[in-house]
Amino acid sequence: MDQQVKADPKPRGRGRAASIDDKIAEVEEMLKGLKEKKRQEDRAAIDKNRKGILDLFKSEGMDVVDVAVWQKITPQLRKLLGMPGSVESTANGGAKGAAS
Image (cartoon, rainbow, N blue to C red; front, side, top):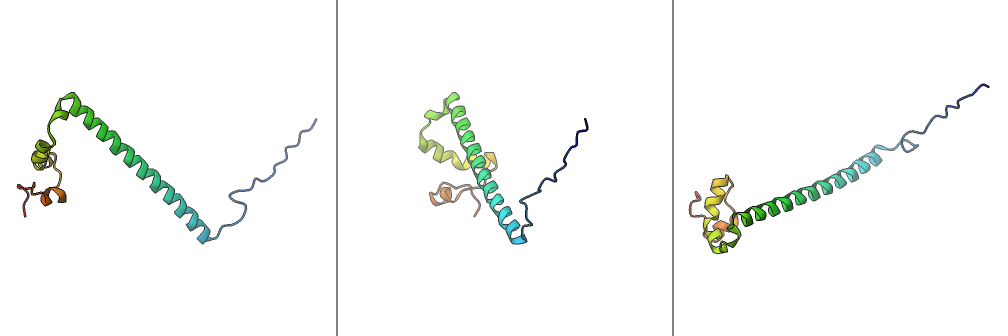
């Protein structure tokens, strides 16, 4: 009872040698997919952060503060958070403390 094991060589890769141009196209397509995945993950993280901020504001009762008050103190909040001033705040005249 001899059992012979047939060792068929398994084809590797796509079965044919790909040209460099084919490989570049394949990698570029993969990169495109990865960039899209990263964009979606970044968007999901921002959405999660926004929801968390809103939940925090609600729990602290800060969601009832009028938007005009928020607009008035936005430059101070940005400074406190270490964020640069925005173009919109300077266009609205809200960046009194910003250096020119």
